[in-house]
Length: 283
Image 1 (cartoon, rainbow, N blue to C red):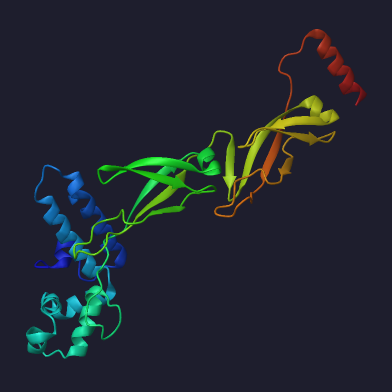
Image 2: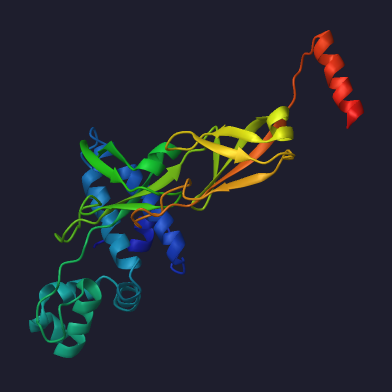
């Protein structure tokens, strides 16, 4: 790492974790080789950005860099012999630096554990029916197609992890992961409240007055709902188990809350009006 990582990411030396992360994401997106096929310098720039983030996102690595500058990386690279002792470090302090830089499988093990590439996130929009039933999607990532399985009951913010599909590691370790952040699109008929669904159901005035049955839509097909005589507009009926499947809980579902909206005829002929007036007068 020859350049100051703070300057590489364009952040101040007292920048917070979130500012560092935002700067890295912005620059990584701009300089990713896949997004710059006509710029041969993009790969080197991207690696430089990744190395800078590797140092600053880890509190221990950042502390070591702030204390020793570029020299701490040279010490870690040269091993315990020569350079480490020339700088006044004993084997134990050098081991601490190695652990801070790369991690270690255990104190005294004598070899650095590879770091990992940066994990990345991207959003994936699905509709409510797909969230109810689960779905398979094919996405384009890194210049190739990847099949993705979306679990039943997914909701806004659900993360789907694709192991090893993140950024490559500049130090030669395994790549990071790709996390798809689910966004469930609004539905024209249903609204969602956690694992429950709500729907408005039209109910004609005669069924509301006399009682009967009304057809209620669900994401798994329509069902018949019995309504008692004298049902008022706005009354809610709970249909148990007709809501969303519970995420990663087999055969468990939320409820559907059906809110009835009483409708009245908009056109009456003379005879119908006379009968309606007689009913009104009798009531």
